[in-house]
Length: 120
Image (cartoon, rainbow, N blue to C red; front, side, top):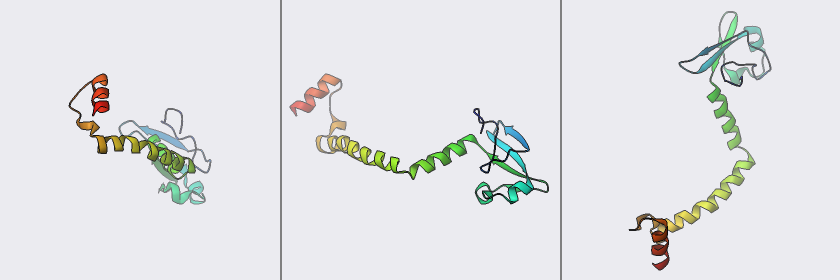
């Protein structure tokens, strides 16, 4: 995609589109490629274009590519490290809520909450 997300620059195989049209209502970009290029492409099953007589068209939104990028990130080892770290952080608020009823304190304000929690 281009920087503004209104034009497809190339397909995953690196082919440039024959034409580009941006639909403002759906925020999708429609690109047409010559049908010979698409039929012989190794990414044909992933793209799943609509085949016509002379061209193959594909409709994509920039948010779709962002979503796919996020899905790829979820499968990395870096996310597993973040998940382990988060599990350790989440236990502290959960323990405060469960054991000490922090959500149901009858006082408001920082100092009063500290005093109530400390003197209880």
